[in-house]
Length: 146
Image (tube, rainbow, N blue to C red; front, side, top):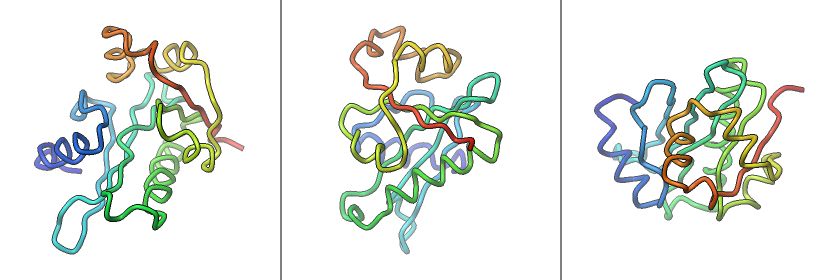
């Protein structure tokens, strides 16, 4: 994703009801998938912890017309692989609605406090702690090393 994509990705993620805060923050890595017309039809990304051992997977979304074709799984795996290539040992995420999707990718339920501790310096965790949203979230985790 380039800086010129910020407005488009914000609109796409807003439609998917995902967190918009901090998309352009240092440490946030985002990618988009486009259709033949150049329209965003998918997104994925992560934020790294300060020590680089943990990644907060975020912004995984697929255009409603593109769902049920495996695009979401491909995008999620792309972010997980990119994090693994950077040396990340564990991926974490928040999801109140998509637990079964993430479980198919190897994620298991996790403790919110552990997630917040491992990723305390990430923009999304800081925002969730400051606003009290952390207490309403469901945390998931997946080991990326074998």
